[in-house]
Length: 258
Length: 303
Image 1: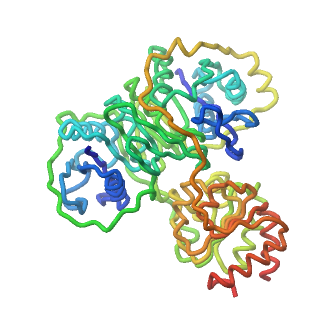
Image 2 (image 1 turned 45 degrees about the vertical axis):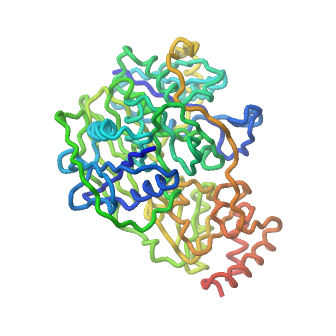
Image 3 (image 1 turned 30 degrees about the horizontal axis):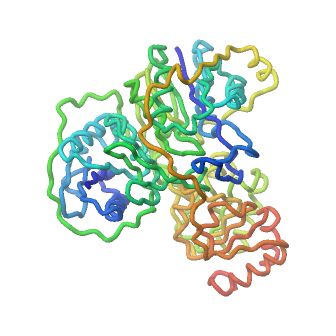
């Protein structure tokens, strides 16, 4: 069995975002980058399936981006992926989801992957398009937003997270594409021995031009903070002073504190 | 300009959120055509053309068949945009339709101005304006971003059918959340813990404030996923929707999935170290502080 996991590197979402010189994306200086949280669940699920099937599957991790994505790819190797592919593109953030999905599909086509996993969305763009579009471009069945995954004899039975605590149970034969939701599993932390082992694993790099065949379908016109609605009171300073002020406000404005 | 609005059904019932699609189309001022995989007995209250495929035959979730049905309606109507809700149904189906049409897709739209769509990014902290460069555009709109108005009307129904209904995907059924634990819908006060609480051992600090306010403990998704608090306490689109008299969000950044579940609260207090956290947008009072320092101080004053 051959498995492909697609991961994206994103900034820590606790960061303060500033608009860069182009006006259409964030300034990268001062940002700390990490693996997209949703993709950690995809990597973990791939590694768990490998363990279930007695090491037989071969798990490739793929990421597109500038040199810094190598760190994220190495983390996936340390979590248990077997080999890595870095598609080098310093300007991946300027490509639309259609192009990103098409690059992945061009890489994966004819390589015989039985299962392709991605996160259900990225934390920075959050379009939730790329995984599904990869499936469409490859003509594979796809289930999104997984919070449950079971493999048995060439078939997967997955639970999709719907709204209000409801789940939808879906079954399909491989090959297939799935996108992973938070809470699907518990992503492992790489251990030191596995970090050392990861350094010896295959790590291939390809220029994005090898796989880029599509023009964009949409363009980003601007990147900006949301318009402040204002209205809300902001308190800063000493914790005890703020607690006193808040109590006064709650007594005045709500019926629940007297 | 014409928009095809793809409504959503669950267990035979039209989801009310579908009317938000009509609100979106009214905002951009386009002609409206609806497409539903539903039933004759639960049609949208809408005067205008509705394409109906039978959910008994095509299933409530079958992405391949639903894609073909939407494409059949697109072929008949030739719409400029095809609109879904940004929900587990919409974000699953929209990219399939967009890929088949090779149309631009814009996800989680919160505002629109002509061909420019404003979407959220960076966990709700920032926005992007996206311009579609294709003749047709596929759009998913953020739940709650376009307020549905009371709807009336009688649709003119056109049946949609497919010849080939083979599909590689088999829907086995729904699984409901475990019906145990707290019913937050009845609580007058909810004090919720978010990721900013740091670790499971700190949850009792938040629970103590909930007790002091004679309220219930709530939680955001990451806290539930991490196993710090059980799922019945989760507030948000995948948990409970609440509207207490007082909602206190402790260390919660304010992802839209959480905000959608609590924004109807009468009074919202947010405690967050990050002054720019999106929760500040819905808070009546934002306390810029570490919840673990502020909450015990407030609890002490209440006792």
